Every structure is written in structure tokens, then in C-alpha cells.
Image 1 (cartoon, rainbow, N blue to C red):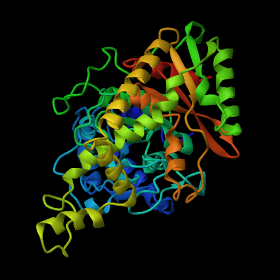
Image 2: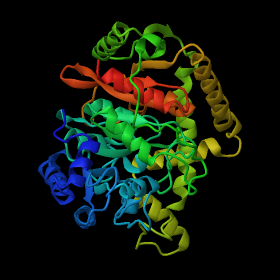
Image 3: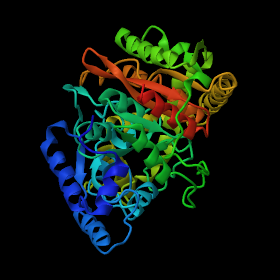
Length: 470
């Protein structure tokens, strides 16, 4: 249980004058300073204290300061806001020229961004070990990873540096670290939250989601940051009823499919046991549980690691050492300026993905790889749609293991990529999914994943909240 009250309660206390935004920001900054050993934070926001004073002045003058008045939060460092590095040397010291839409919407409701969290550089990874700056450590065991790519965000919330954080989820990057750190990670339907001002990784898959300590806060954050944005043409309308005020789910009326392929060998016994315990609670609450096979889901990871590098190679082409970011002083020609900026500025994983992506998009290989991956992606989407004709939710573990040791998988990229094997399916299909704490295995947190049909975020959050209370 977090020492931070629920977000709405914090805002009410600030609005009533029972607490001040200044004190709340100081509390967050003190917690950040006290937990520097965990390497969760890249930078502290210079404007945080000034924004807190502005909130306090609003309240003292009788103005409404917003639904999140004075609430401190942390943003993954791929959101444009103040200094933004994406944890890459190629952007070290870069000052964002504008705010990401998600942060702007939170600030409009009185929230205050106090820090930027560590990540795998450009969100390329599952452990935060690919950060060019440092490795974030797991709050439950400092010898283990916090997950990735939003590892800093999840660790920060687990360490109570702030009551919530923002992350991005392209292959499980909100849910996986949430599972490893024992927090809640919510991945919305693709397009529900604007990606304007978030450094692009895989534009056809990227989503933004909150990491919190309770489902009510996750719903409130989603309610504030969701909806159409003229700066992002992929955005969709939010549910007219919103995501904050939710009815209790009657599990007796739900049909829930247990994804067979998510419970196979390769998943740690302790993770299976914790997942089975979560399923038993749903059964006891009256849910009709049945195993369902999604045979194409086993291809999701392969599809992901063709589509993602392809789009990464395109999106990273803007980092050329000319317009912004790192440039090499050793360059003597324009061509050297390009090659040295990228060679010296990008880390190993970014280079690996650029090369993979350029290969699958190249002449002679496009049809064999990228086009075929998109065709299989459609089959995966169709199979999910067929499953949702018979089931309201699909469930399984979030990750095949608990948090692994730092350095355990860094020399084996394929083993690292397999960490996302249970999360990428929802990304490929654009579905909403949530990771919820489901007990522990050998003293480490286990995540339980719920997936719903595209656009059914309200129903998914309601079910998550009701599961939380079981």
C-alpha cells in the first residue's frame, strides 16, 4: 500500500487548503533524493516548484485548480518536457521545444511533473539495461532489473517517489515493468491517447499509459489524457462515460478466456501458480472461465520484431547530427558528420534495430519480411476478434518470469526479446490490456494480465478495479 493517498483525495485536500502543492512537490523530491541508488530518475524538472506555487496561489485566491490539483507525477524521459533525452547520448542535454499533449492535459488539471524517468534508450528494451546512462534497479531486489522499457517509471511509483508515472507501451513496456515492480500498468486501446510530443518508436503500435498503485487512479489518469487531439491524426474518441466513474463488475455475467499459449512450458512455475490463484479468485466471484487457444499468438513476437525495427529505422533517421542532438566535432565532411553522429551517439540496441529494420525494408526483402509480417498481423487481429465473440476478457500472466538478474540476458538479445512474448499480442492487435499485482514468487512480484476488445477500456478498467477488491 502506497503512502500517497488516491489522486482525487490529494487534489481535494489541496483545494480545501488542507495540504499545499509546494509540500507535495517537496515530498516527491525528497523521496527521489532518498532513493538515488535505484537509478530510476534521469533528471528533476526545474519548473516543478514554480508550478506548485502557482497552484497554491490559485487555491488561496479561491480558484479551482483542477482534478489533480497539486498532484506530483513522473514522466518517462521520451515525453517532450524540459530536458528530454530518451536515455540516449544522441539527445543528451536536449531541451524540448514544446510539451507532449499527455503532459499538457495533466498540467491543465493541476498535476505537476517533478522528474523524468529512466528507460531503455528510445524505449528499445525490456529491462532498462539499454539506457545509455545507467541501469534502473528493482525496488524489491537491487540485483534485479526493473523491467522495460518504462523501468524508471515503474520503479519510481513502487518507491513512492510520486503517486503515478507515465510510460509508453509498444511491446509491453508499461505492463512488463509494472509486473516486475509490483505496480499497476495500463495499456489503452491504440489511438485513445495522443502520442503528440512523445519520441516515436513504432508509430503503428506505440501507446501511452499510466503506472499507478491502484486501478482508480489509472482510470482517472486515462480519463484526463484520452480523447482526440488535432496534433495526432491517429487519435480516437474517448468513451462518452469516461474512465473514472465506473460501475462494479458482476463477474457472474462475464465469460473469461484463459489464453492456453500463455500458460505453456517456458513460463516459470511460480508465475503459473500466482496466475492460477488469480484465476481461482475470478471463478469464486462467479466468472465463467474457459481455456481458449490463440494459435497465431505464437507468431506475434516474430511479427513485432519485423515491424518494430522497420519503423524504428525510419523514425531514427531524423537523428542526423545536423538539426538537433549530438554532433561529432571530429567530422571533417558532411558524410562524416552523419556517420560519426550516429556511430557515437546511438547505443548498441538502437544500432541493432536500425540495421534489422533497414534490412527488412530493403529491395528484395520487403515482400519476404515486412509485407508478410503485416499479413500475419492481420491474422492475429482477426483471431483476437473471433475470441471476443465468445469471451468478454482474455487473461494470463503478464511476463513468463519474475524480474531477472541484471546482466543475465544482455549478451543474448533473443532471450531478452522473449521477455515480451506474453505482452506483444495486445500491441500488435491494438487492444487495451492491464497488468495487476497477483502475489509473489520467491519474494518477487508477479503480474496478472487482462485483455479486452479494442475500445472496451471502460469495461476493462471496471473489471480490473473489481478484481483488485477480491
